[in-house]
Each structure stands twice: as C-alpha cells, then as structure tokens.
Length: 418
Image (tube, rainbow, N blue to C red; front, side):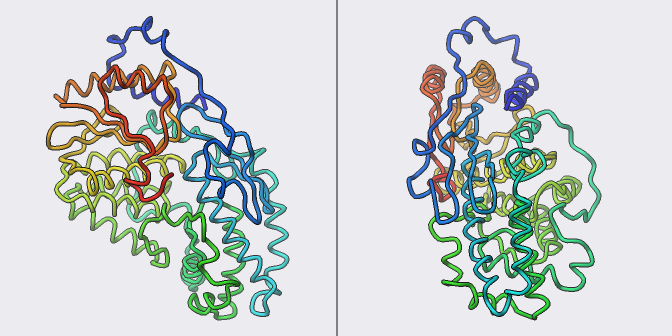
C-alpha cells in the first residue's frame, strides 16, 4: 500500500513543483486511509451469493479499496471495487461449470479437475503476490517504471501456447468463455483451471460453443446475472483470436494518427490481456476529434503490471465516456508521467478510477502540483472525476483550489456504478 504513496510522489517529482509547496500548510490538513465495513461501501445484493461472501473488513490505502472474498473455491483478494465485481462474476460462472461436471457430456472429465482447482486456491490471500489480484504495488510502480522496447507480434502473457492455438483448442476455450460471460484471458488462475478443464473436455467431445449454451444449467444468462464482469470487457468479442485483435488494434491506432513505432510498443506489451488492450483502443477510437491520442498510448505503453493495465483500461473508458456523454475533449495532455485531457474551453479534466481518495500528505501535494500544471496550461478550470468518493478533507482542499469534484461517476462515464 505504501507504493501508491511512492507513485504519486514520483508524479510530483516529475512535475518539478515540489519547491512551490508549503510543508507547514499541508501538515495541518492531512489524514490517514480509513477502514470500512463492507456493508457501508457495497450494495446489499453484492455482499454475499450462493457460493461466496465478502469479508466485512475493507481496507483502503488512500486510493483503492481492498476486499477479501470467501468462496467455495478458496479466498480471493480484490484490490479495487471493479476487480471485486469481476471476481464475483467469475465465481458465478465457475458455479455453472461445476454443475456441468454432473452432466453426461462433461461429468467424467471434470470431477477430478474441480477438486484440484479448489485445493489450489488455498494460498490466494496468504500469498497474494503470486496469485489472484496481487498487491497494489503495480499501480504504484506505474509512475516510476521506464518503458521497455517490445518486439513486434509479441503475444500477451495470458494467452495460450502455440500448440494449443494450432490444434484449435484455444478457439474452443474462447467460445466457451464467451458463453459463460468471462474473459478467456482472466488473471484468475482458479477460473483458468476450470475453463481449461471444460474446454479440454468439450474440444475432445467436439462440443461447440453454441452447443454448450444449451447445456449450461439454467441458461447462459444465469451465470452472470446480478453482478457481471462483462462491463469491464466492453463490447469486445472474446471469441476472436488474439492475433486478429492485435492486428485490428494496431490498425485502429494508425488510423487515429498514432505513430507506428508507438502503436507497436503498446500492442506488443505482454502485460495487457488482449481484452484489456482492445477495450483501450475502442475507447480511444470513439473519441473522434480528440487530438493527442498518442499521449495516452505512450502513457499506457509503459505498463508493466497487470493491476496497472486494469487501472489504465478503466481510465481510458472514463475519458471516452466523458467525451461521449459530458463534453468533447479537445486533446490529451501529458502531466509528467501521467495524462489528463482538456476541453475546448480550456478546462482540464482528470479522470481517476479510484474507490476513495484520501487527503494524505502526498495526495495534498499532488493536488497542489496539478493545480500548478493547470496554470501552466492556462486551464480555465479543473474537473476531477472519480468512480468512487473523496474524503471530507479532500473535498475541502479541492474546494479551496477551486476544482469541481464529480464523485461516483462510474454510472455516467462507464455505464456501471463501480
């Protein structure tokens, strides 16, 4: 959690405005991140389901909430409300996969694999760095890590191997994932194990994706009803081969005026899943008339952690949502190692997919630094859009700065409250 503070500190240093800050003034109005009760931050319907319940204790590091999900498949940790919803949707899908284990079409091949998968879930919370979600270090490091040179046509680290693609198994897996409403490139190893098992059985039995739909108990819609992770996937057809997605994404960026070398860096960044990358490209491509798209692509190209990839995916969608539903964004602008956007009237728009923004010493410094950058850009005002909320002390500081705060903007910008 300390890495988030280090990240924002890196941004502050990159803006070269540290000397302008008053340490005494900031010290008078700072706070520490809180701990919440799950029922205070989540809808009642999300707190528990047939196969899971969310732990009552929710921690916050000043930016994102961290949840623990207890399920029949083990304990999962989700370091954002968005990821929480994805994991819950995946648990619902795994329930359906388990039910298929009892059918004549799949039973013999899945029963053993289901037991192995549950056993493998034991360390998901006790050793989170190597399992689901991981720590929040990735989001923190996004401000300080340099970009790496990438090789053309590099596949995502979350894709299947070459042999699996050649024999057609991967297509079956993608088709099945689509039917269950989950991402075939999910970073959830428990879901991956179950999806692999059912895809192997289905591939061996020549059961197509459309045939599978008829076999899912209760219908495919039941698998992801109530809480769904599909919102994070946007309108991406996950059944499309990843090589095709990469080719389409690269061409879309070139058509949008992004330099070929930069488009290649982004497309071949293996930290992004093909789905996440496609969502970003779709979001940017929808912003017709917005200049400086290359600024956002360059910002995203340096991603080296999966949680950062999710963060930047959601950020791209927020800016696209703003451009499509609030006001046209004239251009993206670099803010040190970060990006913002300006409207035609000069307003600087900052979109952050954060759960709860706390006025820590670092964040107070960042806000003042951003205010200084806004003056350099001759911004007519500053708007801060959050998917979650800001603490009372943060609101007080923003009001003093003359910023306009928009909380819980997910519904308006992303189509979901989270």
